[in-house]
Length: 200
Image (cartoon, rainbow, N blue to C red; front, side):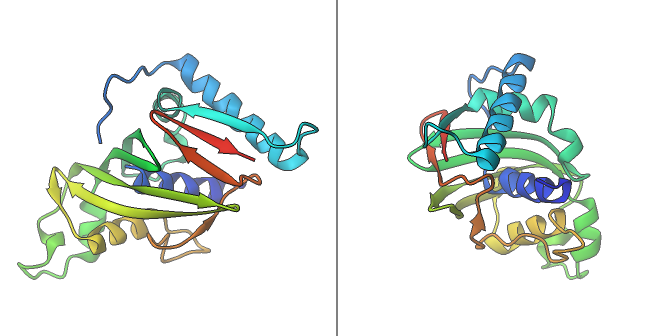
């Protein structure tokens, strides 16, 4: 997957699956295990497998360990410390620290009623929702979004996501409602409690 597409996928993942970790075990070993599993998923997506359907479990600890040890070079400047909670029954939640100064400078209108007039600095953003996947396509159904514990409208989250996911090919960035193709011939992702299973 090209670097640019990996970055879009990661940014989408961070914002579309953004709640603080509970009793998580973060380690370099978990991070390396996650990286090895992703390599196997890519290989299977390219070459297939003689045994047919492949199911690869990814634990919450592995994902968060990878975020801690390997994700930083792929994150856009201003997005830090992503953390994921795999709640179960399709529900995912997570948290990231986001630097709002750059967005606020670009978006604020100067009006005292403009929400961007009140946001600045590095603040925690949390998002929860349901990840729907089927037949090689995915869609995220947003449930809640908060900045520093204060509920925010969907439009504010969309502006933030659009800003941090911009690329030359997609100058408006990623949209929350957009369906997206799953990479590496992934057919679906089963979201259980504290783990997700990638089905190819």
